[in-house]
Image (cartoon, rainbow, N blue to C red; front, side):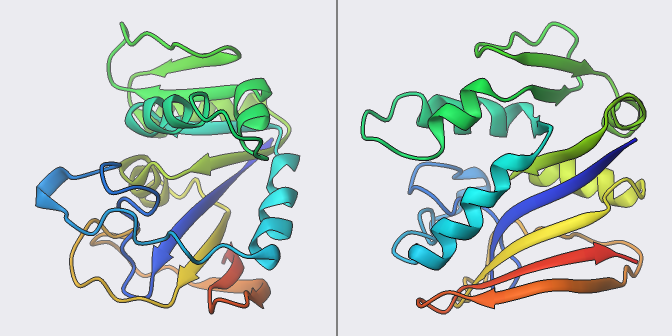
Length: 192
């Protein structure tokens, strides 16, 4: 059985929306896009380099289109493009007609909690969720997430979509933590 591991950049007040680029996600009038730039250092680079050990990646449709669209258009050498393109990717979508534009991609059409539970049952190893806030909240509510890897940035935005919405209490157990030279706390939690 697979393990669902969420990997997310969040700021100190829990916002996960648009960390990479100004135009990445402007839904709801969000104007702080790109808030995560300038924090990357060697500590984060080494930690992220370990993240490619996942068996597969799992995305919501919007994050899939955005992340792969961006990283497959970057011409500078980077550690992300090859991993994103070559890894098995699963994309949760309510729409059965969703077209997936990148290789090694499989559509999980229907209710995310149901389709991901089935994926978990037939997959061994770590299934890494990248971004995909709506998907994460759905999987969290269904009790399907076993691990959160959070890069907690030393910034408070005051608005934007947060990683966790309203819901029941969930206890997390810290498994590993380190701090980057830029003040980002990298924390890996197991769901109790």
